View 1 (cartoon, rainbow, N blue to C red):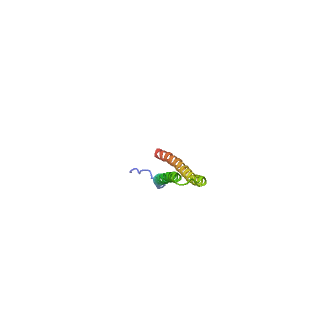
View 2 (cartoon, one colour; view 1 turned 90 degrees about the vertical axis):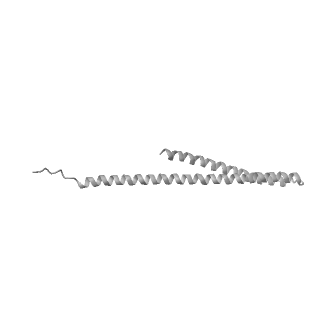
Amino acid sequence: MAKRPPPVQAGAVSDAQTRTETENALNALLKLEKESQIENVLNARRKLKEAIEEFKKQRAVGEAELTELVRYLASASLSVETAIATYESWKGKYEALEENMAALEKVLSVIDEHIIELKKE
């Protein structure tokens, strides 16, 4: 009489197969999530850089406005009150622009740190 091989438990094979498939699916999802995070972070970085460049352009315009103010004051009869009010208005806009640029650059550095962390993973 020929020996029969021991019966294979069908449940054990399909459990291992299911576990492997589940692990593979989870790994694929994690990879997609990480890629999505990286893409989102890179998009945010690009938008921040664009905003900083726009603020730099606005700053250049502001500096040109100050130059025009100086020319105006040099050529016109001097009104101290008008000169002070115009300068204070310019200064407020310029300082707000500088504060916004500094804030964006700080956020940009945080994003750069996050990108480094994502690359390590």
